[in-house]
Length: 242
Image (spheres, helix red, strand yellow):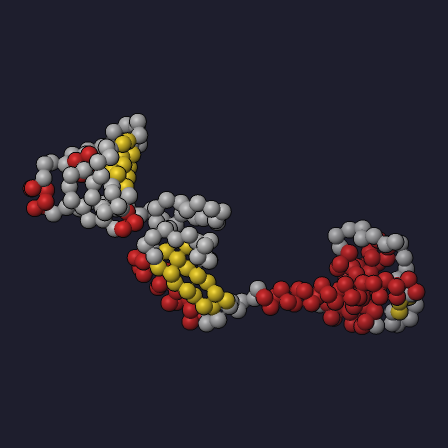
């Protein structure tokens, strides 16, 4: 019983099979794009590993010995199968891209950031079919069969490969007229009784982050302030500018 004795067995066996098929080591070297001495060395290594003489080198051409013919009959199909697998893998993962890519994310982000990239990408890769699924709600990427998802806010739960792309900062704005009609607002607590315009996906709570302190403003589903009191983590207070 023969045993592969080192990691170079495939390379050595391929050189041996090519030599038998080509009839000479020179022709085998041409086929393998290497040197005659390189082929000869690989065949010698294979003979050493197996403890057998595989080639008769007495004439100008080389011929398989009885043991060499047996090894050829065993190795040739394996070498052919390996070469076919390499060729198919090369075809499947070459420069030509094809298939479906489903992308999900907030409408504003997809429109301003992703769509310009898609517009440039699709002419260069016409076999790729891109599906844009814009939603301002937090989509279940797995259930919706999403290949590439973007999320603004909390990190989605699940076994995803995730990477933070950027940090988006938001500001609270108010008209001068509104500020005149309401008492001075010097901290997030002062917003409890101020009418607010909210996006649907933000209708649960707001979070204000300063130097360590996190303030939450609980809201009802309708977007109005709920009677739930404000809560904050026991950390240093927000700076005046927050």
